[in-house]
Structures are given as structure tokens and as C-alpha cells.
Image (cartoon, rainbow, N blue to C red):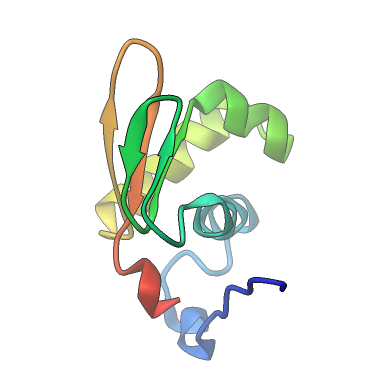
Length: 100
């Protein structure tokens, strides 16, 4: 059965909706985040969490590392994501992922 992510039309009121790179990054993180508790490479993930690196996101989205870094900073500042970085990966939590 297909699993969908719905996006509220109110997103057009978000301050970064007109920035293609930040919007693409946000939607991508939302789609990649866990939709149920799971384990990935020995790390327990809760709903809305994913493990990635800036390099992975850069390759996957075809964006420069600087654009990914800037986009992540914007998403953190807006309270859309939080993150915890280790020497191997970054654990990103999409806050209120159930809202989307």
C-alpha cells in the first residue's frame, strides 16, 4: 500500500516557501523521515527522524554542500528541524512531522 505525505496549503505562508533549495530540502527530509518507530544501522529512530550526512543530501538533491548547509540552518532557525551531529552522521528530527 502506498504511503503518502500531505502538505498543508498554509506552507505558502512559510517564509522560505519561495526558495527552491530550502523548500526542496524540507520536503525531502519530510519524505525520508521515519513514519513509525524503527531501527536503522543500530540507531533507534522515532517518528520524524532520519540519519543522513550533508554529503549524502548534496548528492541526492544535486545541491552544493553550501546550499545544503544554508538550508539546514534555515530549517533549524524556523524550528522545522532539530539535529544532532556525530562523527559519522547527523540525526535529523522533523518537528511536528505528523502535522505534514
